[in-house]
Image (cartoon, rainbow, N blue to C red; front, side, top):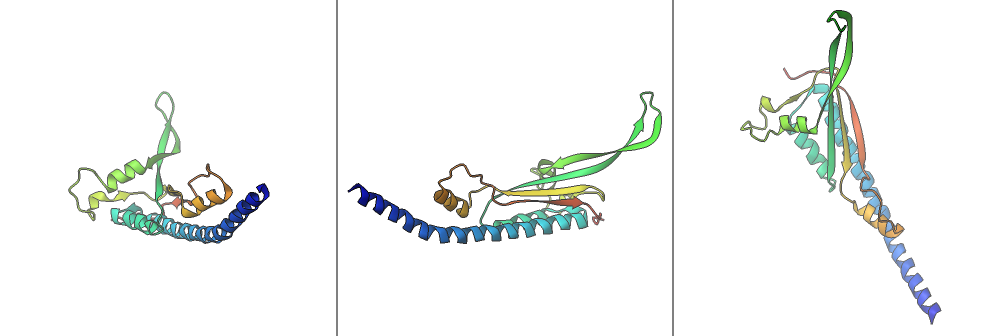
Length: 183
């Protein structure tokens, strides 16, 4: 009797894997397509910011809306490094004929406060809601999915894994601001 139950259990497991494996492959391809969509969205947004030298609420909303088409949720981290030239002085206050190049960092909180102020009556296309960057600054966006994709869930079932990370789609992209076109 024991042999019969073991064979029946093994047959059920085999049948489940025969149906689950193609589903898993299809969902993995869906994640690959989502990754391409997100990569294109991030590249388009960052390159637009680098070429124009500013971010508008409309640009940001279009970027977020494009990624939302994948059906996943994302954590978007923006980093703006503003180049600053600081003169070098001695302790006595004498200028040393040189400058240090330092970068001042601005992140999501500062960028979003400018784009989407909490107490503003300005319209979405108002010049007061434009986040400006300067030529020579650096701007980087990193996008990570925050949800467990269907492919991740199926793979957890097939591989009996429960501690797999959520982040299956991770796209970092950035570069130097090339232009200041906000005049």
